Length: 359
Image 1 (cartoon, rainbow, N blue to C red):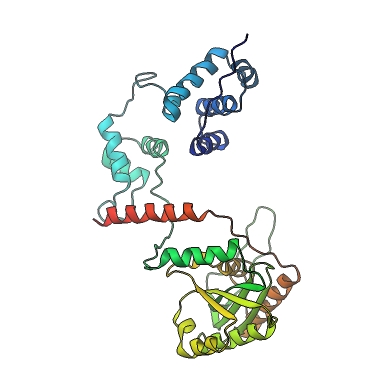
Image 2: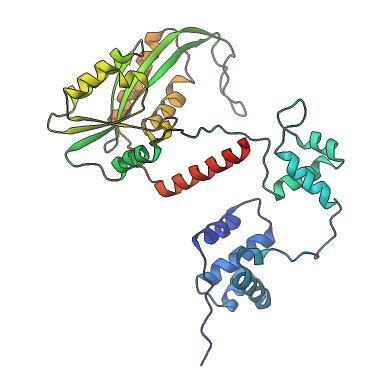
């Protein structure tokens, strides 16, 4: 009787990492081959089949299969002591790694050249160490952690509307896009040709601003909107009344909005009390990413506002309303697919890291 084919067992995180190594262009050939071996063996292929498919020897497939079976992901790394001896002392490597996260005197970050001068090695060596450790001190991105005491309750309340919308109701993601600027470039763009990129002048004439109030239907993707010159509770109340007129009276209205002061005004609260079919769901503070209308605002800014040149506020307003009318002709809803538990775990890790950095 032939021996049964041994199948390697993979955890979800291990499988994601192995698949990333196979796809990533920066992964070395040997690391990619080892990842392919483990993935194919996890599918139930025999060692001979894996070797034939990858053009490797059976001994090679057997070696990395056994190493992974015994040690997991750590078993796919080369044993220490093999290959050429490192030419850079370990103390220098540790210094490069440590200082990458520390601002140099008089500057905000290190470059490969400045850190190379400080450590006495070449800039290319600093770059290789950074890449090996997946360090990217030259890149930045913004973030903000919510300090809302009721964050989780509001978080699950909003996500619950996305994942299980109530029957006989409409879910509206609402907000205002304030300070849409009517900027007129001082000169027209140069003609776009082969090998050329789009151009625009760095200076402009500012004609004024307009405020867009928008309510995005989560299920249909259609928008209820109006433009205003100001951004106060009066404009927000007019917008709520417009929503009340346009939504059939037999439907309940669930409004997802932030806790901006105009939304909490006493007159707004009193009006909502007289219209019980409106149910407000506030996103946590500093968590506008939970409101899907923000995704639409990003598209509006990119497609219509930022790249245009407008000689008046009216011209900008007309461009916005035309864009919205065309979008409502072919609505495209956004769908929430992220796992809430994973998001909370990520936020918890960020809070721990922020606390450690502050202490």
